[in-house]
Length: 266
Ligand SMILES: NC(=O)C1=CN([C@@H]2O[C@H](COP(=O)(O)OP(=O)(O)OC[C@H]3O[C@@H](n4cnc5c(N)ncnc54)[C@H](OP(=O)(O)O)[C@@H]3O)[C@@H](O)[C@H]2O)C=CC1
Ligand SMILES: O=C([O-])CC(=O)C(=O)O
Image: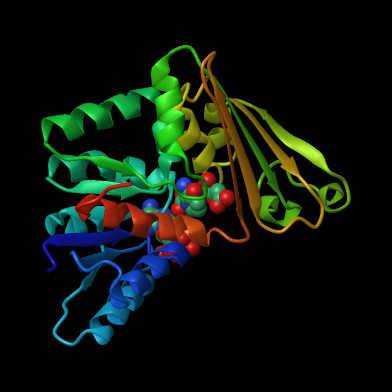
């Protein structure tokens, strides 16, 4: 039975994975009621896709964020960018919509994080951080809860995925190089849409300014490998996730939505 309403912000590649999960029956508890994207045609394409797959289904593409908020969906799935999450999240939470987000980088800003936390609590809404291209939040949180811990985050990627960034130059096509070293707050500043995972791991462990982050470019490498290491004097965990594409991040949204309504929760 469809007892939760859903809206999507950001109708790109990963939104298509969620739309396909809806039409293939993997999200039976949700009714997609609205879509919004910077480019209206993309919001329309996702809405048409779900409407056509199920006669009688009504998902409405909208032209503004205000129109989407007015739908008061139970859950808004954000798959646009950290900047987009910053723009609408507080209004959505005040308006009674909970959020499932992939653009966790926005929460590296401690003041924004705190505003989100208090607004969600005051309005009885929640923000679900999808595991995205990593995972293991449970063990990261558990070890961090136990007491003094340290955490590191290492990413290996191919040079092509850095092409639209300030660290890119042609020499990366032939030379392996660590293009960024610092913490997660610095990483998301340098790569505003590409290292949500580093911020997510930091929030689950020692915080954006206290996790040691390095990003290495490897010639010819396809996809991303993320390695997280968290430890205290009692426990020690290593999490390694390889994604050939970012599809795993779209699927993690499907998994998060299923967990929200599941009788047995992982
Ligand atoms: N946590 C994680 O592991 C991961 C997180 N991500 C996050 O997910 C986001 C989406 O990824 P992906 O689907 O691959 O990217 P795409 O570029 O394919 O899709 C993003 C869509 O969002 C739209 N959009 C961008 N900004 C806004 C805005 N302010 N308001 C409304 N719509 C907007 C885009 O614009 P338009 O409609 O004009 O095309 C585009 O259609 C990434 O930007 C990143 O922040 C991605 C991968 C992994
Ligand atoms: O897909 C990935 O490997 C990571 C990514 O884009 C992000 O964290 O935003």
